[in-house]
Length: 109
Image 1 (cartoon, rainbow, N blue to C red):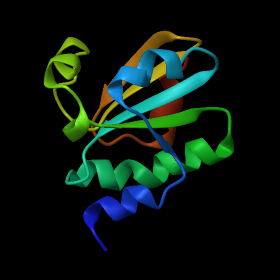
Image 2: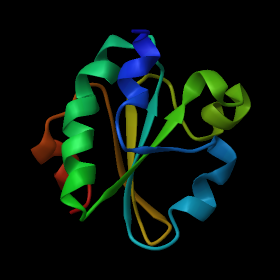
Image 3: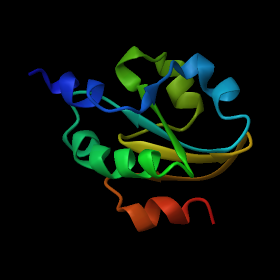
Image 4: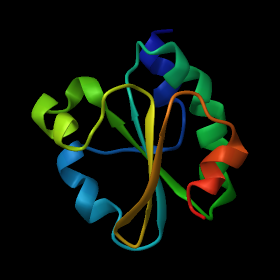
C-alpha cells in the first residue's frame, strides 16, 4: 500500500485549491491542507474522518503538493497539516499541527 492509499481509502472529499471558495459557501467545513508524505497529516486523518462521518461538519482535503505555491502562500499555509474552519463561506478560525477532536470543534465557536 502506498502512503497516499491511506488518504484515498477515506470518504472525505479532496478538492483543488481553486475550488475552495465555491466549496465552502453553504454549511460548516473543515479544510485540511495536507500532503501524502506528512506523518502528522496521516495521524490526524482518523480524527477528521470521524468528524466528517458525524455529519455536522464536512471535511475537505487539499493536497499541498498539487497546489500552486503562490496560492498557498497567500492563504498563509506555512506548515501542514493546516486546518481551516469555514461557515457559510466565512473563515472562522485555523490551526496547524496535530489536533484532537475537541480542539477542531472549538474552531467553530
